[in-house]
Amino acid sequence: MLVSDFSYHLPPELIAQEPVDQRDQSRLLVLRRADGSLAHQVFNDLPAFLRAGDLLVLNDTRVLRARLRGHKTHGGGRVEILLGEELGPNDWWVMLRPGKRVRIGTTLSFPRPGGAPIHAVVKEKDAEGLCRLVFEGIDNLRGVLDEIGEVPLPPYIQRPDHPDWSIDAERYQTVYARAAGAVAAPTAGLHFTPALLSGLEHEGVELCRVTLHVGLGTFAPVKTSTLDGHVMHAERYELSASAADQINRAKSTGRRIVAVGTTCVRLLEHAALEGDLRAGSGQTRLFVTPPFHFRIVNALITNFHLPESTLLMLVSAFADPGGMRGRPLVLEAYAEAVRRRYRFFSYGDAMLIL
Image 1 (cartoon, rainbow, N blue to C red):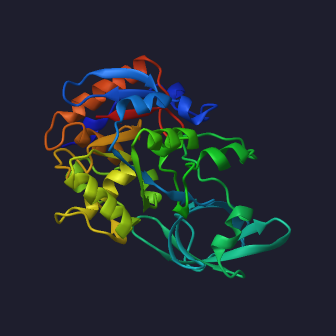
Image 2 (tube, rainbow, N blue to C red):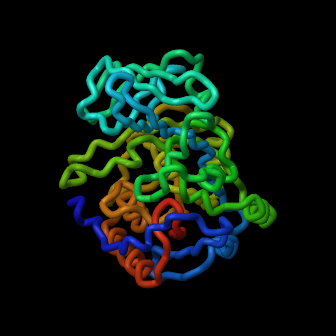
């Protein structure tokens, strides 16, 4: 298939720049796979579409303040980095801008309020344009990120040069975020409130928590013309024995597994590639495209995704498991969402696929 097969028109004004006032008041577009029908709801209506015995799987990753702004120690040119993979306490692969002309051995400086600047040396550069930085003068970079870092909002969300991060610091995290390590939020989970989760449990919906740390690849466009040519980015995950047991019990008794977000889908389907779902930790490069046979997930809560993105490809595969009609189903649903002025992307509205 061609990457361009997953293109669609989106008016720029429909890209959400701010979250709605209350998390669960986002709109919810419900797509029923059996007949392609659509329903237009509010996210707080979700309990009407779930039932007792359903297992709702949540990604409990927590977003780091992973964007740092600084300058080159020699020459003073401004730089911006987005932390990616952590190799050690002060050893990171990062996305560096501007990065093409930065040489190995260059020292970067990042201001620290009330303290001496933090320095980092460029140690390596890889074929994808990422840089490996080693930070100096601190025990562990993670310990100072709340002081020197910014919320790593996606590039399509515009903020002034000196934004007030207080709203984003709260709203760009899920209410159940626990395990720090992501550089982007698992956005489908942003719509949940403690009251909504508690209400679902009261109605007999079981909750399960897994961890997949959203990585730099979430910002990377597909650069090939065909799906076969794309190399999927790796993301770190952890599936505990207790979570795996929960999911396997639900599957064995015929209950639905409802994934909150594409991150949960990738983790669960990766963990079941060899048959039974297995606990463990590591990295996944699973690239889900049509046709794909889903072993675990029965329903999906997700946001609206960028044109030609790997996330849109996954959603298209899920809309017709094992078949090829999911792409037109999803693109028709997206066109209807555009006509009805839904809000798109990270701070936008949600979709439920049943």
